[in-house]
Amino acid sequence: MTSTAEIPAFPMTRAAGCPFDPPPVARALQEEAPLARVRLWDDSTPWLVTRYAEQRALLADPRVSADITRPGYPSPAPLPKGGTGIGFILMDNPEHARLRKMVTAPFTIRRVAAMRPAVQKIVDDLIDELLAGPNPVDLVEAFALPVPSLVICELLGVPYADHDFFQENSKVIIRRDARPEERAAGHQALIGYLDELMGEKLARPAGDLLSGLAARVEAGELTRAEAAQMGVLLLIAGHETTANMIALGTLALLEHPDQLALLRDGDSDGDNPGLVASAVEELLRYLNITHNGRRRVALEDIEIAGRVIRAGEGLIMANDIANRDPAVFPDGDRLDLSRDSHRHVAFGFGVHQCLGQPLARLELQVVYSTLYRRIPTLALATDVEKISFKHDGSVYGVYELPVTWS
Ligand code: HEM
Image 1 (cartoon, rainbow, N blue to C red):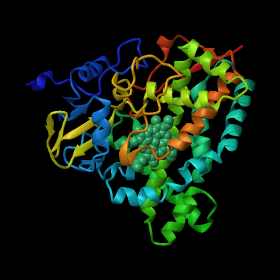
Image 2 (image 1 turned 120 degrees about the vertical axis):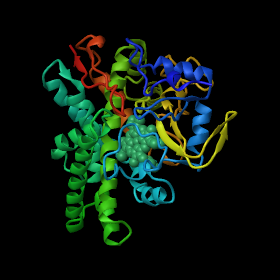
Image 3 (image 1 turned 90 degrees about the vertical axis):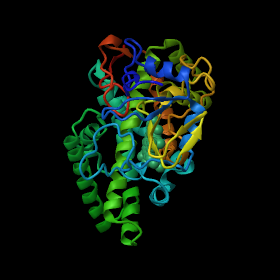
Image 4 (image 1 turned 135 degrees about the vertical axis):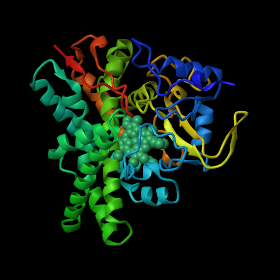
């Protein structure tokens, strides 16, 4: 049996010079067994679920809870007093389903597809501004953050003029090393902001998602506090994740020029949606930006892979290494845009599978099919060793991406 001292700490460190690859210790655990104990910041020792098949089985299992307030839940950091209040992502059914159902319609594939021209315009306008502005430039500030922020603001009915405010507070909330008081303050600021907006939507409803929630508040289907909480979840999830995929995806492509050429040249007239769609899936698989795993706690004893997970034990589904599991993705450490990667778990699995995935896919398809075609000489304006990576957050990416073009 492994002694406590031998249980590896989680999260683990990536190998120097390998910013796109999961930590070697996690890979070694995956090779050894589908389940392994890891040690968290509070000395608790939940299970790390290392392999694809077991992760999907457990994420689909109703005996597994996403409720962060339950004893044994492997929280990534100390909980702020008064809870995280981050909405239905950390709740179980039936409460989770009741709330999620209220916001599924705007994220259906059909509704999202209708947004393509608007998203294309946002991307084109930002590239026009980029080309007219300073060179080199930080792609994160000038492009990767504005694209999804503009899109989610439009969808929700949040004024984009407030982007500095909501981007700053979102950053604090998802920083693992932020103090609990800092995270609570960031969260309170966003809740207050969304509550105020809800007041405006109640007074002057428009055609946006928040107005839809306001109508439900008026109809007594939802409390105003629940509506504000959902607004916060959608606002954070809607911009931070996609922004990191845009910047980190661009860096990965610049570091794999053969793959970048395949994408740019294969879609030279913007006429190869199949190639672009498969490139998006492969980059999602390869980069898996939610690199701290899907966190859960067992509600009952569960037998899996020859072991018994006891009721009350924590589970961390390490979806970054599941997306490199050789049983599902042979030669998975290779970025290969022509690979069929659609079975990846970068959007999670089960009832909490990403609600915004059609929107994220659309934004990434538009970006990846436009940016490198319109700026074919796009290049890094610094050494990759000098780039600072977001090892400290629940979403992986780069803080800045200085780029240039000729
Ligand atoms: C590339 C971009 C994105 C990635 C990689 C991503 C990833 C994920 C993952 C892994 C989960 C599952 C969480 C869990 O099981 O614990 C999730 C849930 C969620 N995502 Fe995304 N996401 C992205 C973009 C978006 C966008 C654009 C939105 C739009 C608002 C969004 C909204 C949500 C929501 C609301 C949930 C909670 C679903 C639930 O609990 O039922 N995400 N996302």
